[in-house]
Each structure stands twice: as C-alpha cells, then as structure tokens.
Image 1: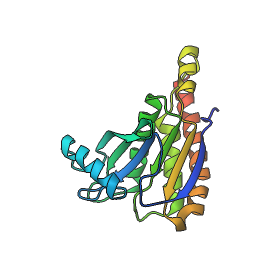
Image 2: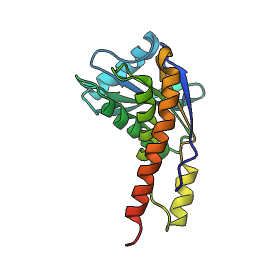
Image 3: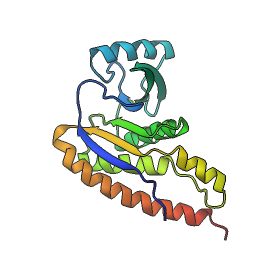
Length: 190
C-alpha cells in the first residue's frame, strides 16, 4: 500500500485569495471568490469564457502572481452546492496541479452546510484519489508520476472549523488508503 507523501495544512479562511501556484476556488453565479481586486481580475476572465458557474463547471484561469503566474481553478457550485461538488472540484484542481508538475495545491473551501470534518475528509479523499495512478509494472511512468506529484495541500476553512478539518483529513486519508488498496488489487493480474 503506497499513499502519496502529501502533507496537509489547514488554515483559517481569509478574504483575499491566498497565495499559491494552483488555487482551487469555488464560485456561484454573481459571487466570485476573493477580495475586490481578485474579483475584478476573475470577473474579466469569467466574462471572456462565458462561464455560468454550473455545478462541476471547471475553468483554469491564469493570474499574475509575483514573478511568475498562478492558476486559479474556478469550480462552479451550481444552485445547490454539495460535499460531492466540493470533492469533485478539489480532484479536478489536483489533477490540474499534478498535470503541470506543481507541488502545492491551495484549496479555499466554499460555505457549505457540512462541518469542517467533512470538508477535511473530502479534500484528502479528492487529492489522494484524484491523482491515483497504477504504476507498479511501469517504472518509467512511476518515476514520472512521483516527480510530478503534489507534496503539499493547504486547505482554508472557516476559523471555527480548523480543528475539525484537521481531524477530517486524517479520516479522509484512511478512506483514500483503503480505496487505493482496492484499486491496486483490481489492477493486478488475476
């Protein structure tokens, strides 16, 4: 059983979009994430893309960030946001980050009815399972997968949910580990 060597950090959510090379941000029609400056930049991209914030709609937007650039993966919440929407959105952002060889993923959790423990668990499951690859018999692919793997995830949740989210991440990693083991067994020769 091999679980990716990902470290998770939980931080209290802030108004501005936090720094990070790949950032997963959730949005609803007319309600973009971030402070006023961030919203103006994102709004220009949203208009250009004709994005509608439908559930599971994903757009990667490049924004200036220091000397380089950062990618904001905008995930639509739709009319009735759910934990599954959050999970799928984080998985899409993790795949985007890993596909670009980015080592750190920043996730800003949306306001959902779920508590921090559920958000933490869903985040860990999404990252671990969204970037899964069976490479046991392909050493070159295994090296490439390890070289491009996410190493650090920072999850921003409401201040009151920080400790619950940390507990949820531990649970999510256990669930993901069991799922990865099952996937590995299915992928093995009969």
